Length: 226
Image (tube, rainbow, N blue to C red; front, side, top):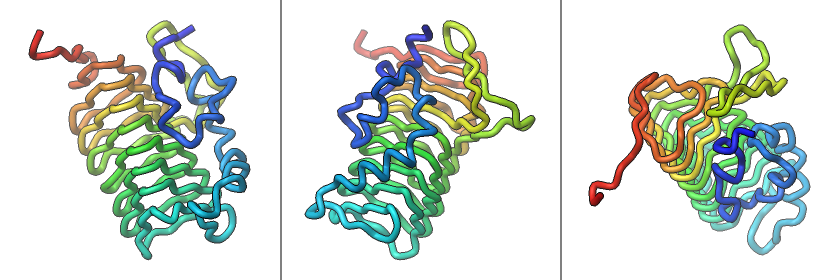
Protein backbone atom coordinates (compact mmCIF):
# COMPACT_ATOMS: atom_id res chain seq x y z
CA UNK A 1 0.00 0.00 0.00
CA UNK A 2 1.10 3.57 -0.74
CA UNK A 3 0.57 4.67 2.86
CA UNK A 4 1.60 8.30 2.35
CA UNK A 5 -1.18 8.97 -0.16
CA UNK A 6 -4.04 7.46 1.82
CA UNK A 7 -6.98 9.48 3.11
CA UNK A 8 -5.86 9.13 6.72
CA UNK A 9 -2.40 10.51 5.97
CA UNK A 10 -3.64 13.50 3.97
CA UNK A 11 -6.74 14.79 5.76
CA UNK A 12 -8.14 15.55 9.19
CA UNK A 13 -11.68 14.27 8.74
CA UNK A 14 -12.87 16.28 11.73
CA UNK A 15 -12.50 19.34 9.51
CA UNK A 16 -15.19 18.53 6.95
CA UNK A 17 -18.94 18.04 6.91
CA UNK A 18 -18.25 15.26 4.40
CA UNK A 19 -16.35 12.89 6.70
CA UNK A 20 -18.76 10.02 6.10
CA UNK A 21 -18.02 9.93 2.37
CA UNK A 22 -14.51 8.69 3.15
CA UNK A 23 -15.70 5.61 5.02
CA UNK A 24 -14.42 2.43 3.38
CA UNK A 25 -12.16 4.47 1.09
CA UNK A 26 -8.41 4.02 1.30
CA UNK A 27 -7.33 6.50 -1.38
CA UNK A 28 -8.90 9.91 -2.02
CA UNK A 29 -9.78 9.39 -5.70
CA UNK A 30 -12.19 6.62 -4.66
CA UNK A 31 -14.48 9.39 -3.36
CA UNK A 32 -14.83 11.40 -6.58
CA UNK A 33 -17.66 9.39 -8.15
CA UNK A 34 -19.70 9.60 -4.92
CA UNK A 35 -19.74 13.36 -4.30
CA UNK A 36 -22.97 14.30 -6.07
CA UNK A 37 -25.13 11.59 -4.54
CA UNK A 38 -23.58 12.20 -1.13
CA UNK A 39 -24.42 15.91 -1.24
CA UNK A 40 -28.09 15.26 -2.00
CA UNK A 41 -28.40 12.84 0.91
CA UNK A 42 -26.48 15.05 3.32
CA UNK A 43 -28.31 18.20 2.26
CA UNK A 44 -31.69 16.74 3.13
CA UNK A 45 -30.45 16.13 6.68
CA UNK A 46 -29.10 19.64 7.33
CA UNK A 47 -30.70 21.83 9.97
CA UNK A 48 -33.22 24.29 8.55
CA UNK A 49 -32.19 26.69 11.30
CA UNK A 50 -28.64 26.80 9.96
CA UNK A 51 -29.03 26.11 6.24
CA UNK A 52 -31.39 27.38 3.56
CA UNK A 53 -32.21 25.36 0.46
CA UNK A 54 -31.85 27.46 -2.68
CA UNK A 55 -33.15 25.91 -5.87
CA UNK A 56 -32.55 22.27 -6.70
CA UNK A 57 -30.10 20.53 -4.37
CA UNK A 58 -28.28 23.67 -3.25
CA UNK A 59 -27.92 24.26 0.48
CA UNK A 60 -26.31 27.44 1.75
CA UNK A 61 -25.52 28.15 5.38
CA UNK A 62 -27.34 31.23 6.63
CA UNK A 63 -24.04 32.52 8.03
CA UNK A 64 -22.29 32.22 4.63
CA UNK A 65 -21.73 35.25 2.41
CA UNK A 66 -22.58 34.66 -1.25
CA UNK A 67 -22.15 37.55 -3.66
CA UNK A 68 -25.14 38.13 -5.97
CA UNK A 69 -22.96 37.64 -9.08
CA UNK A 70 -21.86 34.13 -8.06
CA UNK A 71 -23.35 31.17 -9.94
CA UNK A 72 -24.08 28.01 -7.97
CA UNK A 73 -25.40 24.85 -9.58
CA UNK A 74 -26.40 21.82 -7.54
CA UNK A 75 -25.73 19.50 -5.97
CA UNK A 76 -23.82 21.85 -3.68
CA UNK A 77 -23.38 22.68 -0.02
CA UNK A 78 -21.89 25.98 1.10
CA UNK A 79 -20.79 25.69 4.72
CA UNK A 80 -21.09 28.01 7.69
CA UNK A 81 -19.23 31.33 7.47
CA UNK A 82 -17.95 30.50 3.98
CA UNK A 83 -17.54 33.26 1.41
CA UNK A 84 -18.37 32.87 -2.28
CA UNK A 85 -17.18 35.99 -4.05
CA UNK A 86 -17.92 37.97 -7.22
CA UNK A 87 -18.39 35.84 -10.35
CA UNK A 88 -17.47 32.54 -8.70
CA UNK A 89 -18.68 29.66 -10.88
CA UNK A 90 -19.69 26.51 -9.00
CA UNK A 91 -20.72 23.96 -11.61
CA UNK A 92 -22.07 21.32 -9.23
CA UNK A 93 -21.03 18.40 -7.05
CA UNK A 94 -19.22 20.78 -4.71
CA UNK A 95 -18.86 20.96 -0.95
CA UNK A 96 -17.44 24.24 0.31
CA UNK A 97 -16.31 23.88 3.91
CA UNK A 98 -16.89 26.11 6.88
CA UNK A 99 -14.96 29.36 6.68
CA UNK A 100 -13.73 28.56 3.17
CA UNK A 101 -13.25 31.22 0.49
CA UNK A 102 -14.18 30.75 -3.17
CA UNK A 103 -12.89 33.82 -4.91
CA UNK A 104 -13.59 35.99 -7.90
CA UNK A 105 -13.81 34.05 -11.16
CA UNK A 106 -12.88 30.80 -9.43
CA UNK A 107 -14.49 27.68 -10.91
CA UNK A 108 -15.32 24.53 -8.95
CA UNK A 109 -16.56 21.19 -10.23
CA UNK A 110 -16.83 17.85 -8.39
CA UNK A 111 -14.80 18.89 -5.38
CA UNK A 112 -14.61 18.75 -1.62
CA UNK A 113 -13.07 21.77 0.06
CA UNK A 114 -12.38 21.12 3.72
CA UNK A 115 -12.93 23.84 6.31
CA UNK A 116 -11.00 27.10 5.83
CA UNK A 117 -9.72 26.22 2.37
CA UNK A 118 -8.92 29.27 0.25
CA UNK A 119 -9.20 29.34 -3.53
CA UNK A 120 -9.57 33.12 -3.69
CA UNK A 121 -8.40 34.37 -7.11
CA UNK A 122 -8.90 32.97 -10.61
CA UNK A 123 -8.54 29.31 -9.67
CA UNK A 124 -9.90 26.20 -11.37
CA UNK A 125 -10.45 23.22 -9.07
CA UNK A 126 -12.03 20.13 -10.61
CA UNK A 127 -12.28 16.49 -9.53
CA UNK A 128 -10.16 17.33 -6.52
CA UNK A 129 -10.06 17.34 -2.72
CA UNK A 130 -8.41 20.14 -0.76
CA UNK A 131 -7.63 19.50 2.89
CA UNK A 132 -8.04 21.74 5.91
CA UNK A 133 -6.61 25.26 5.43
CA UNK A 134 -5.14 24.40 2.02
CA UNK A 135 -4.54 27.54 -0.03
CA UNK A 136 -4.12 27.99 -3.76
CA UNK A 137 -2.43 31.20 -4.86
CA UNK A 138 -3.83 33.44 -7.57
CA UNK A 139 -4.15 31.76 -10.95
CA UNK A 140 -3.12 28.30 -9.74
CA UNK A 141 -5.23 25.47 -11.14
CA UNK A 142 -5.82 21.74 -11.12
CA UNK A 143 -5.57 20.02 -14.48
CA UNK A 144 -7.91 17.04 -14.42
CA UNK A 145 -7.64 15.39 -17.86
CA UNK A 146 -4.54 14.04 -19.61
CA UNK A 147 -3.80 15.40 -23.07
CA UNK A 148 -4.22 11.89 -24.55
CA UNK A 149 -7.52 11.42 -22.64
CA UNK A 150 -6.32 8.09 -21.21
CA UNK A 151 -6.95 6.73 -17.73
CA UNK A 152 -4.93 8.44 -15.02
CA UNK A 153 -2.19 6.58 -13.19
CA UNK A 154 -1.27 7.79 -9.71
CA UNK A 155 2.49 7.89 -9.16
CA UNK A 156 2.79 7.20 -5.46
CA UNK A 157 5.98 6.95 -3.39
CA UNK A 158 5.69 3.15 -3.32
CA UNK A 159 4.69 2.53 -6.92
CA UNK A 160 2.08 3.36 -9.51
CA UNK A 161 -1.66 2.78 -9.13
CA UNK A 162 -3.95 2.49 -12.15
CA UNK A 163 -7.22 4.24 -11.30
CA UNK A 164 -9.39 3.43 -14.31
CA UNK A 165 -10.58 7.05 -14.11
CA UNK A 166 -10.17 9.66 -16.85
CA UNK A 167 -10.79 12.77 -14.74
CA UNK A 168 -8.74 13.33 -11.60
CA UNK A 169 -7.41 16.68 -10.48
CA UNK A 170 -5.29 17.05 -7.35
CA UNK A 171 -5.39 16.06 -3.70
CA UNK A 172 -3.89 18.58 -1.31
CA UNK A 173 -3.29 17.55 2.28
CA UNK A 174 -4.03 19.81 5.23
CA UNK A 175 -2.21 23.17 5.30
CA UNK A 176 -0.73 22.88 1.80
CA UNK A 177 0.31 26.17 0.16
CA UNK A 178 0.32 26.36 -3.64
CA UNK A 179 2.13 29.32 -5.18
CA UNK A 180 0.60 31.66 -7.73
CA UNK A 181 0.34 30.51 -11.32
CA UNK A 182 1.07 26.85 -10.61
CA UNK A 183 -0.45 23.89 -12.46
CA UNK A 184 -1.21 20.69 -10.58
CA UNK A 185 -1.25 18.02 -13.27
CA UNK A 186 -3.77 15.14 -13.27
CA UNK A 187 -3.39 12.88 -10.26
CA UNK A 188 -1.03 15.14 -8.30
CA UNK A 189 -0.92 14.48 -4.55
CA UNK A 190 0.70 16.90 -2.10
CA UNK A 191 1.25 15.80 1.48
CA UNK A 192 0.34 17.84 4.54
CA UNK A 193 2.14 21.10 5.38
CA UNK A 194 3.99 21.31 2.07
CA UNK A 195 4.67 24.36 -0.07
CA UNK A 196 4.70 24.63 -3.86
CA UNK A 197 6.78 27.40 -5.41
CA UNK A 198 4.98 29.86 -7.71
CA UNK A 199 4.81 29.02 -11.43
CA UNK A 200 5.40 25.32 -10.79
CA UNK A 201 4.20 22.43 -12.93
CA UNK A 202 3.66 19.64 -10.44
CA UNK A 203 3.28 15.93 -11.17
CA UNK A 204 3.11 12.82 -9.07
CA UNK A 205 3.63 12.92 -5.32
CA UNK A 206 5.10 15.59 -3.05
CA UNK A 207 5.85 14.29 0.43
CA UNK A 208 4.46 15.91 3.57
CA UNK A 209 6.41 18.85 5.03
CA UNK A 210 8.31 19.50 1.81
CA UNK A 211 9.08 22.49 -0.38
CA UNK A 212 8.57 21.89 -4.11
CA UNK A 213 10.96 24.19 -5.98
CA UNK A 214 10.84 22.49 -9.37
CA UNK A 215 10.74 19.03 -10.89
CA UNK A 216 13.42 16.86 -9.23
CA UNK A 217 14.12 19.57 -6.66
CA UNK A 218 11.98 18.92 -3.61
CA UNK A 219 13.51 19.65 -0.23
CA UNK A 220 12.41 18.81 3.27
CA UNK A 221 11.21 21.63 5.48
CA UNK A 222 13.19 22.27 8.62
CA UNK A 223 12.61 24.12 11.85
CA UNK A 224 14.93 27.11 12.11
CA UNK A 225 15.13 26.47 15.85
CA UNK A 226 16.78 23.07 15.23
